[in-house]
Image (cartoon, rainbow, N blue to C red):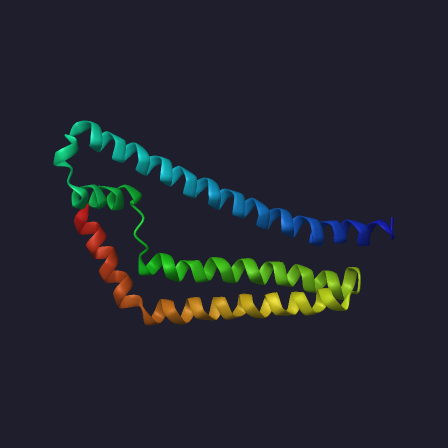
Length: 148
């Protein structure tokens, strides 16, 4: 049983993390492909509705921008720092604990310490930018409320 713990820890650290990263990359590509397919459908619908000589490319571009519906707001950008900070901190903490206590590996301690430091930096950036950009975030929320 005692020899099984380092093996399971190694599999989780060196197999689980790459699997999570690979899953994220695959999801990003699928999301991008879905957006391209939506844009293709919108363009083909616009072409079918109007004559070929009477296409308005400016209106088409505006419709495609509206179809995305995800204008990156300041609040979303600030929340990304929180997301990255929490993720890096947790992964760094787990790798650091693994490298210090479960199966002493110097490289795991270094990688865990770096990830933990990066995560803490993102969290500090989140709290600082949240307070610094509070007025802009409130202004954008009011604008979005007025549009609805």
